[in-house]
Length: 228
Image 1 (tube, one colour):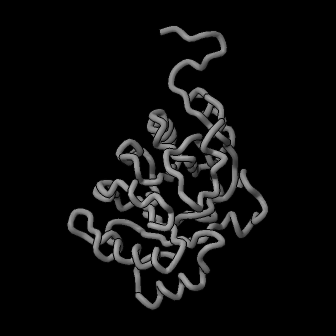
Image 2 (cartoon, rainbow, N blue to C red; image 1 turned 90 degrees about the vertical axis):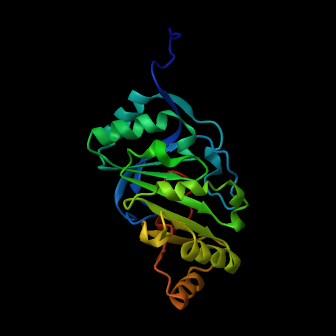
């Protein structure tokens, strides 16, 4: 197969942005990292704060993306979106980064089989609660693919979402064990919709073994829409 002049050779990724920042969420919140935000997502969560990544982006060769990430120099690399796992070359990117010694995380909405991301150090699986409008798109079999190094995040918009998530944590099992025994689980208040203090109180009252997850980048750069 031949390529036209100016057309990337080999695997390509549609990329919205690549930049340095601090990891805003997960158990690695606060760590300096390079973020690779891919373009496109088949979900439309009601509270999505990265809708600008649904469309557009630039088609870039895998080697070019790797070169830019390595030039930025961070050990931690976060692959996000959009929905990064909707792009087949995302698996190759994670494999190449891991082979180069990078610590890698991938954030996924959970409607795509996460097996393709097993080269990542950590997969952050974002289960969709009813308030997202996307609950029906959850691929529940992904819970059976989770490893101890992975994490689950659930964004909550209301008390009803919290009750749903509490039941998932208590009743939904993977391999016969409660979800919280598989990997860390994090509850995140939807920005502007659920008071973080209220969520904290509910977690404490129910003695849930979950982590309250706040978006650090929103606290540090509240007016920035992207690049944080």
